[in-house]
Image (cartoon, rainbow, N blue to C red; front, side):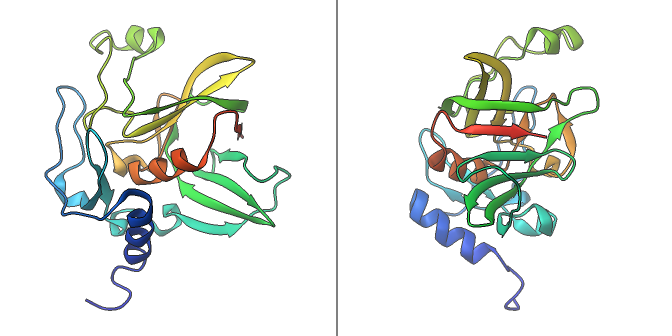
Length: 213
């Protein structure tokens, strides 16, 4: 294995060790009754978590630009803001000093996009997925709800976006479909790799401003 073969894995694993404890060998991918998780070969390890471990994606299956990285940021938003650039498929966590932590994301499919400003009004670990009335109208076979877990489309963590004190029904959340990162694949929510939303969840307090453009 050459020195560049796992160019960011060592860094990522070291960071996750600090955040979530020692890494273990990945188990088999989970499959739900409706939502099929990525096959086991997508994963290279775990972040220990309760009541389920968080699976770490092999970065060689993700295009380079969608990996976690610190980048220059010249937007007007102050440090601590989350900025979602839909056309670029990036989420920026503004650090200040002209820098931001950037993550690859999946955005809403055509006709399901949204933009504007909101705040993180609520945070949840292993959230329950409750399809909206519109989603169930489009697909009556959708369940009323899916409990949190590896087969849940919301993944390991979710940030609930509110506007004027009202839930917008949009979330920034994890995913059990890592191949969707970099694509327009959701019903309007912002998807991230589970390991990325795990980190963001720990860093972002409720009340954080979110700008979607």
